Amino acid sequence: MKIVRKTVYHYTSLDVFFKILDGIKNNQLIFYASRVYELNDSTELLYGLKKIWKWLPQIEKELSINDDRYKLSKIGTDNELMSGIFPKIILDGLKKSKINPFVISFSNDKDSIPMWNMYGDKGNGVALGFDLQLEFKKDHSEFSDLTNMDGRPFSFSMSYGNYKPKDAALRFVKIEYSNYYNKVGGFANIEDIINKQLDLIDKIAFISALLLKHSSFSYERESRLFYNIIGNLNDIKFRTNSKGNVIPYVEAPIPLSLLKKIIVGPCCNASQVKKTIDLKFQQIGKDNIKIENSKVPYRDF
Image 1: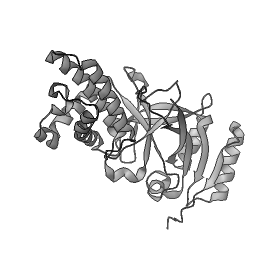
Image 2 (image 1 turned 30 degrees about the horizontal axis):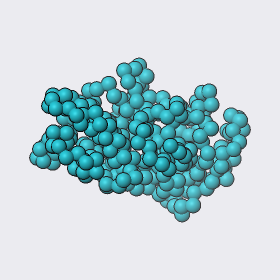
Image 3 (image 1 turned 90 degrees about the vertical axis):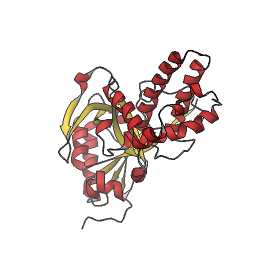
Image 4 (image 1 turned 60 degrees about the horizontal axis):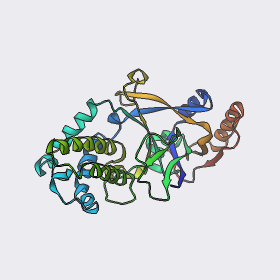
């Protein structure tokens, strides 16, 4: 399996950026990873589950699953799916489980006006380019862990609800469904089948919570870095966001060596900001990061 990395960008203010640099520990940049249940898109978890359920008949066809006893798509009536009752039951169960997914968001777009406006201090911030996103050049059916790869952090591109074979969400659902069917295909006892289906539902719910968003957010071209806190609740801290909401988060380290590029926002005094960043990098002994100016003709007045 050949794996390469792609540069993705984290938009932030200059103030937060310098605080991150001041907080370096053991050559690691410390970010705040927010719990997935409190992110901006209030519908994404239910939305993702509904989308995956619509994919299931096609996935079952591709996997040649013909016996209705083994089909996950037969669970939940059309009315339950349309009203959101069934996916909500799954979601409630996921929230009560020991799975605590936390994420840091990046974008595949290094110079986007909406991203500058929403996350980059209205053009007065920076976009930090990290070699994080995994790009699979060959089939990766043997890999289904979304949170770890040889101890190195990585991110996955989000899907926005379309059935595209290359989308990470769809590919991982197919992997998990195939693994389930290989185990359950010879079972005759309906109780044994249901138990395996419940395990599969948990995995699918986890994937949808992390990798699927409403198409209204497609402009973000988001890529997510995941952290899963299992049982160790003492690692979770709390902060308030700009809207006054309390957000659970964990401190998430990213190696400084993965920071490859910085884009200076379109509304900044570019030469002054570059000099300040260069001075800070001299302090921490980092001198191989490329600093570029935004190419966006955007101003904040």
